[in-house]
Image (tube, rainbow, N blue to C red):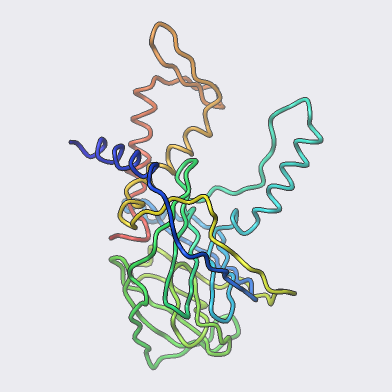
Length: 286
């Protein structure tokens, strides 16, 4: 069985797996924004993607997500308003932003459990990250960052070595992505190859605590199963969203993009494979 068929079979099997887990409420008091800069193409590291991610953190919990997830309520309200003001048209302007990372990390720092929820096309999956807690080495080295005195620490995760700078002036032992466990907030984090970088943008105390919960309609899988289908799902969605029509004449499939370009089914599949190939430098190597 070739690779493509193995992935397809794995994806189909995931659709029929159920989920049973103890629901946890993740209580957070702070909204923390990080600017991320990263290179998805290892052959073109100068091509950097820049986006903002959000960490909602509390005494024992943290929830890390992309901008769309953080502003989901506003996006839904905006699109609903556009629909109601344009009743004759089914098209709406979305205020969501393009992102390569559609996973949300639910961290229970008290029990050292991280549950990850990710979307692939129309399906939502849940897996538990097996690599936590991370093994940190705190270094006797400090500097100033964002007005704080920060201290250096190092760790490894999923095939990369990382440098983190944390501050005890913000007593939240959390940080971007999966990273947490230092005696203060991680305000800067990057891998030693400088392919991925997270830097603190803003920190705000919420006027009232915000509670998060894992969605009910998720399918439980292993981390390995999810990583098999995530890149394919991202690229399928990106390409499908750029299509305006699909026609079939005498068994021949023709796809038309929003800019009017026509392509065959074979050209579409080659484009998909090329886009997957060019995105070969994900943050998790293993």
